[in-house]
Image 1 (cartoon, helix red, strand yellow):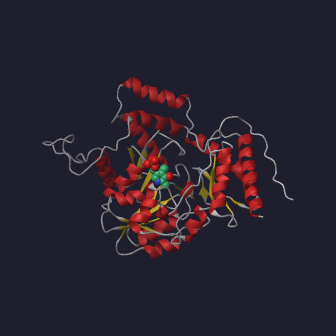
Image 2: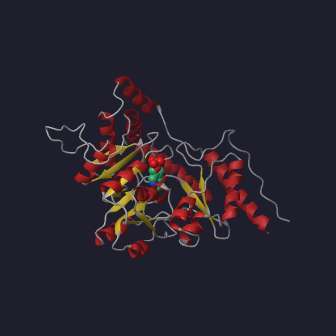
Image 3: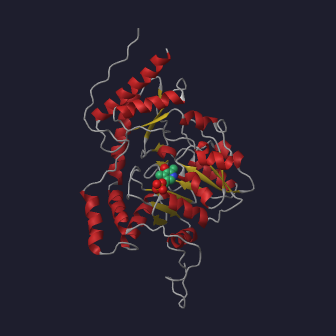
Length: 395
Ligand SMILES: *Cc1c(COP(=O)(O)O)cnc(C)c1O
């Protein structure tokens, strides 16, 4: 009779969260300075934050906005993508990377992923291009910049822009190219679970002067880009714009986080390396595969159960972790199988088999800068325990 290995006792009595922002006195001081200044929107701190992020991505322009999703929405509009147009993209991502295509009335054309990097399979991207394709929208899934150069070559060959949804990859790179530097345009996101946060926020980065100017106008009610002396810029609206501005307080938080970006990434790399060491060699756990040309800033730490395990078994492993107050999640369910997408487009199981197989077996583990080694050991032992329990159950 086989017995389950007993669980070690937990190192703390508090929950181990899935993610946590890293806020220090520096961030607090920067935000307070804005509050004391009396200038809370459309000011110098946003411009400073834009220069910092653009420089990090090796780009001429940064256009800050109120979320990554808003940034993607503006990019689709600014590129003139609309009804009847197709955008080639991944079904294995956070929903925003696909929703932005729907906002402008265009059609997402999903292609399956390549199982090592979990990014789109470049061969399938090439095959999905039609005369209606208006862009390729690529995501650095979980921060992995694999295949970006291949997508860039395919986009150039077909004369369509590459849009980089780099919301998960700030500070990473491939060879000498920083994340945010691959596409015609890239979009970062600063929700609290990302590498850096502004609370809510996003940033468009590009070398294209015109595209940046149109995005600035869209962000601020479509105000005129080149105002004439007679109309003035402020109350002349030359396109349908939005209020997608980033407040100065949020930008101040971003400036402080950017000042600490290298320290933040180093901490994430240490935590990731510990997980890799603790989990390496486990037969039923597939670790993230990182190419030697990639430098990772680590958005999340996602492992996969081997093919022996079903989606239900994976779900029970996650429930088991949560019962022990360990934050774990099923990053990500496939976009094409989301209720809204099934209904609107008639997508079904089996259409993107690699993405579906992967998404049924992923487990995102607690991951943040201050995760202690004892906490990681407890997470790993609990994960191993839950996996073992599933395989004993099955007999
Ligand atoms: C986080 C994220 C976004 C943007 O999210 P917001 O919450 O709108 O800032 C977009 N795409 C991907 C792939 C993301 O992970």
